[in-house]
Length: 304
Image (cartoon, rainbow, N blue to C red; front, side, top):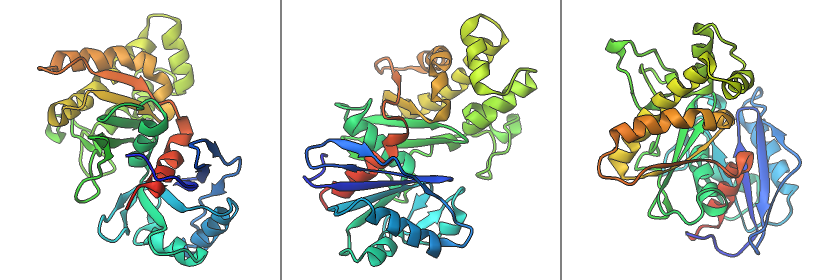
């Protein structure tokens, strides 16, 4: 689905900053050189006041989209849960911003940040031309966004494609505790956080850039560890293939820079588990840090 013609503002609320930009009526886009600190020390109201002031700086727009980490109630738009933005839980961000900006009801639309990053990549990034894809974000945790039949799919309860919390090793088989309350989740094996942990446990540097540099330079324990992490990541991706028949994956997030080293392990596992599907395609995201706000701008312009 392509957005309606218009000037759309996208806001991507992260744990430390809000990134933003505008997509123009001709389809061109530009990220703002400015970011807004995500300062929630004083509670949600002062932050939302600052967010409204930030949005005003972009001039007249036809609509605003907001991406935010967490789970939104599809019926009300309320942020129901967010591990990294707890003070905003319970806020209904769309109406709050509309009220502050004097905009008509429905002018501000909200969604999960990983879902909107997938939406951005499908529109203007590595997913152009694909009707079905899964975006995987590798960072502090592992997030996911899902496009099915050309449309963003968030699920009935806003929880679709929480790929980082697929259990790949049950607790009783040694799965480590996860921040979600379960154990053995994919992100406890293949997120940047746990890649550092695994490196330390192996007696290697936990500086991931250095770890990757050494892995690229020669065969050795660094390359072997990244191959093993890739195999574990491939296990999670293979579940998506089996459940949804999605075979195109886009990998983003800070740890996606290691994809060249993770990919052999990913494909090894996925090939071993493949049954009746085409060979999966796993590529790096093209939009980098712009994917979230571009997807949010696209959401703002979606036909109601």
